[in-house]
Length: 49
Image (tube, rainbow, N blue to C red; front, side):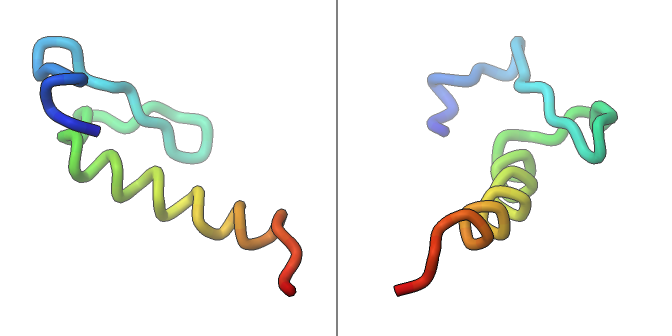
């Protein structure tokens, strides 16, 4: 998620509930959105010990 890997002139596209988030969030806000959705998904798929 380094800024050198995702330059501002080619922003990542983020989606929420199937629709593109506009205006495109910056890399940090986009990462927060990804983690907000990814963590519950992983918790539901990985069995507890």
